[in-house]
Amino acid sequence: MLNMPLDIVQEIFSYLEPLDLLHLARTTKSLRQFMMSRSSAFLWRNSRRNIPGLPDCPIQMSEPAYATLMFTSYCYVGFSTYRQKA
Image 1: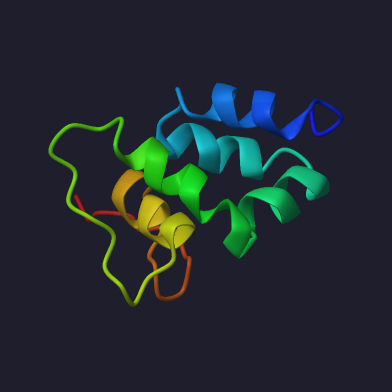
Image 2: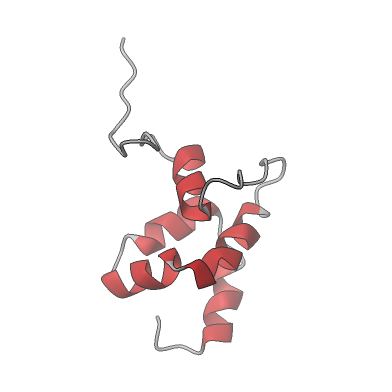
């Protein structure tokens, strides 16, 4: 996928939601490197805008960390799985 022109990749990613980007970032080392770089923050911001009513990312958090907090069951502080007691 990273062999494609960057503008094509950006266009495709613009239709995705933050959880989709998280899943993509976890598929290969090269995609993770690309998706987690600061230069890719705009991709995360754009994907966040695909979710109506989602609050802006707090300034002290990275966009991927915010996506993890909002859309997964991982604890942001320790990245451990949260399990609710029955």
